[in-house]
Image (cartoon, rainbow, N blue to C red; front, side):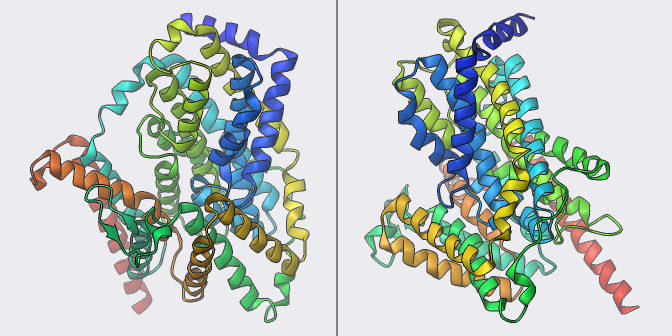
Length: 501
C-alpha cells in the first residue's frame, strides 16, 4: 500500500502540463531517431542526452521515459516496414512483421507492435513498482554456467525450428558465430580473424551486421527480381488501421507469453532484450507448427506480438534493475546510468530513500510514457505504412543511402562500409538459396555471451566440465532443449512417412 501511495505522489508530479509536454517530445523524438537505419533506441537516448542538461532532474528523466520507449517503437517500425530494424531488439519482430507489410497488412503489424509494447511495458513497470527491492534475488540465480546454457538453448532451439532444413539452420548459426568472434579476444588479448586490419580489432559492429543482413540483403534480393516480377514495384497499404476481434484473440496469448519471457530478463545482465525476443519468437513458431494451418512464414501476427511484448517488458524491468540495484542490464540502461550520474545521483537501494520524489516521479512517468506512445503511434500507423507506397526503385535507393550513412555515422570507418557490402551480398545469396537469417543474428548477438560465459565458468571450476550441469536452472534448460529437439525430429520423421505413403 505504501508503494501505491508513493506512486500516486509521483503521478502528481508527472502529470503537470510541462512534464506531459516533455514526455510527448521525448516519445516523438525517440521514435523519429529510432526509425533511422543504423541508429536505434540506444542511439536515440545517447543523442538526446545533451538536450536534457538544461532541465531540472524530474523533467529530464520524465523526458527520458518518452525517449526510452519511443526509441524501441521506432526500432520496430522500420523493421516492419523496411526490413531494417533500428536496433537488435527489433530483429525478431522483423521476420513476420515485414511479411505482414508485404502482404498489405502494415497498419495491423504496427498496431500489433504498439499494443504489444504497451502491454509488455505496462505489466513490467507495474511489477517494478511493487517488487523493485526484490529484483536482486532473480539476478543472483544466474551465473556463467546458466548464461551459457541459456545461449545454447537459444542457438539450437531457434536454428532447428526456423528452417525446414536443420542443416541450413545450423549453417546460418555458424556464420553468425563466425562473425561474432572477429576481433581481439578479451581474455588472452590475441587477435582473431582480423587479417591484421586495425579497424577489425574491436570486432564487427552489430549495426554493420544487422544492416547488411536484413537491409542491404533485402535490397539486393528485391533488385534481382524487380524486372522479373512487376508486382514488386509497390506494396499495398490499404489494410485496416486496426485489429479485428479475431486478430486480437490470436495476439493476446502471444502478448502475454512474450511478457512472461521479457520480465525476468530485464534483471539479468545479458546485454538487452535480444534473448527474450528471440525466445518468444521461437516459442511462437514452435507452437505454430502444431496448428492445422501454420501461419509463420506468411506474416503471422503472433510473430510480431510476442517479441514486441518481450522487448518492452525487458525494458520495463531493466529500468527497475537500474533504479533498485544500480545495475545497467542493457546499452540503453547504461546510458541512462550516465544520465543519473550527470545529476549527481547514484542508482541503487539508497536512491529510494535519498531521492524518493525523483524515483517515484520517474516510475509514474514510465506509465505516462507508455500511454503517450500508444496514443501517439496508433493513429500514425497508416501514415507510417504509406512509406511503402513510394516506388520500389526510389524507396530502396533511399534505404541504401540511409544504411550507408547510419553505418558510417556509428564508426566513421570505410572498412565498415566495405563489410556491410560483403555481408549484404552474403545475405542476398542466403535468401536466394533458402538459408534462414534468424540464426545468423542469434549467433552474432549471443555468441559473445556464450563464449565469455563458458570460459568464465570453466576458469572458476578449474576446467571441470561438471560446472555446466551444476544447477537446477542449467539442467532444466538442457532438458527442455532435448525434449524440443526430440519432438521436432519426431514431427519431421512422421511428416516424411506421410509423404511417402
